[in-house]
Structures are given as C-alpha cells and as structure tokens.
Length: 269
Image (cartoon, rainbow, N blue to C red; front, side, top):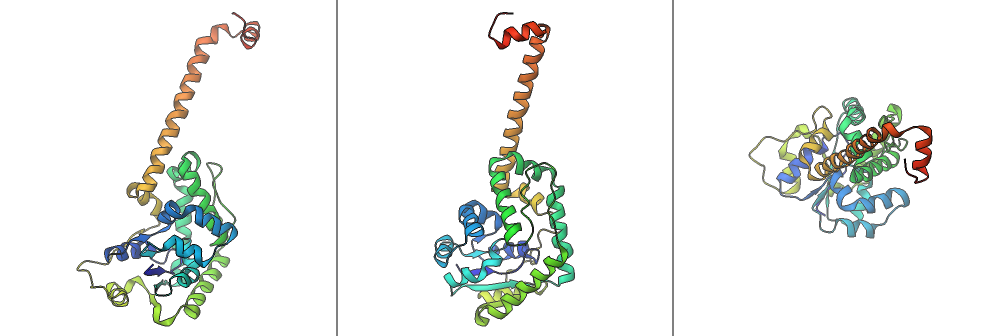
C-alpha cells in the first residue's frame, strides 16, 4: 500500500481515483473493495477487524479510496506506516448538497433498484452498501428489500460527522505523510507529494451531477456483470410467466369445479 485516500465521500474521490491511476497506481475504489474484499469488509463492518486484516487485504494494492476506506484510514495506515495519506477536502456547504444529491440519484435510479433486487451479485452489493450507510454514515441500514426505498439523510448528523472526520485526520495523521488537498489545486501539489511527474493533460473530473452509478453501469465490468445478471433473471421470470399463461389458457376450457378437483387428485378429465 502506497497511497491511502482519507477524504470523505463526495470530496472529489472519483476524480482523484482517475488521477492516481493516471500516475501509475493500481486503485481499489468502493466497487473493487466490494468485489475483491467484500467478505472482509462485511466482517469488519459487523464484528470489527485488526491491523493484520488490513495487511492481508491490501498487501498487493497500491492505493485505496472512498467508502468504506476513508473511515478506517488510521487502521490501514497502521498496517502500512510508510504509505502516504491524501486527504481530499471540500467546503462543507458545497459538500452536503452534493452528498444528498448522490443519495437521491441512488433512490431514483430504476436500473439500480432492479439490480439490488434481482441480480445475485447486486443483492450482495446492496447489503454491503446498507452496512456502510449504517456504520460509516450513521444512517439506518437501507438495503433495498422492496422496489421503492429511500436512504435517510440526516443533515445535522452528516455535517457533524463530516467535521469530526476532518478533525480526526488533521489531528492524528502523521504530518510528514499527509497531504491536505483540494482538487481545485490540480496536478502540482498531488504530484509533488507523490514524487510523480506532472501529466501533460487536464486534471480529470468525474461523477459530476451525482450520476455515479449511471456511469459505473456503463463502464465498470463488475457493475456490467450485475446488469447482465439482472437481464438473465428478468428473462427467466418473463419466460416462467409466459409458460404459466400458456398452461392456463390451454386448460381454461376444463377449469370447472369438478374437473379441477379431478386434476388436483391426479384423475382424468
């Protein structure tokens, strides 16, 4: 582990993911943490973990970012004391509306709701997101067990958590390993901190307007697999429904009370 991103969700972490990858690092974002380390994170979020867990989980990873990593930056850094910590920051009154919009995008995304219900992999993903919301973001577990669901967002609590996280990182992260970073600063401070040459391209900007899951379903292979599973499941359900309608139509002329009784008793009509 070389880089731990301790920035709270919606502080530019998706843009930073692209930037760090451009600098040559293999990055575990929240989807990779689910795909490769989902069982470990389920255990940590439910029962707790240890420094040894972090060592095992991230020994072959260059950088990690976003949920649920940002809350556990200290434990991961204890496992990798030479790793550098990038702390993305954002003005609070700009951050909270962006965070709330992200939650609304999840609620209103019909495809995502179907994935959480009908994709086996999506169900596991939704379960982990529910645990993260409960533990990391201090909201009731919001695993979507029905098509219509809502993620509760308590503004007062979220703003307090945001400030507490900021204070925790600033006070406790080793100063010689810490970069407090706003993405508006561009490549220069990030590359200087990581001892990397400045790329000859514009600094990336991602997840603009809270369309994160829409973008992931188009580009990320794990999310694309969930979409494929969804369509397979829906195809099977449609096929079973069509078969049931065919059988019903075929036997409709025989569905008198007496004939139904005979059929249920395996008699002849």
